[in-house]
Image 1 (cartoon, rainbow, N blue to C red):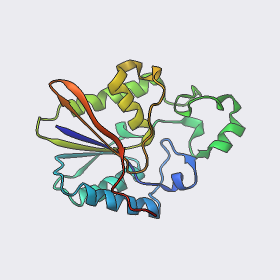
Image 2: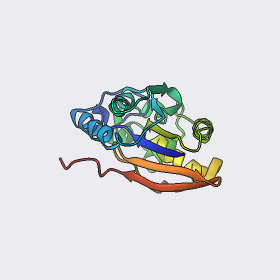
Image 3: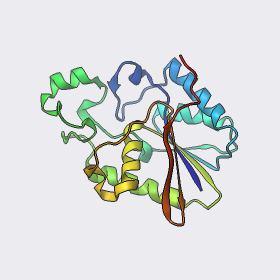
Length: 201
């Protein structure tokens, strides 16, 4: 099996430098162009199953991929970005002014009331893992989600429930593509955050 983990294109929230979490934003004009390039890049790959977060920025990106495929987008709230509670929809400057205690923390794991817990994130990672592992050997799956959740999912693949003990080892840019598979029950990470489908601005 081949699995493509894809971050959505640039959103209006990204453009305004806001931490979005589960707040809903459309793709920006730049993000829509990125999604078109992504769809064209993946057009020669037969995708059997295409999953997307139900947030607009991810679903709009997935729809650009869907146009070149013979499968339909399946939306799931389990693929949403990490719920950042009271931090959502704010810039870092606004967050640090309002919540100075999180200045030196990983904002995906701030511990503030109303934010998603490590246990809740782990459960979502487990669900996605079992979904992907259920694919047949020759099937290809694409998942369109969010930078924070996809990064943590990759960390989960490396360290299981102890993913939070890892320093966040990489970032995933808008429409960045990561490819993984399993061979003889062993995880293969082919690449992370590939974005050569994007044209220079």
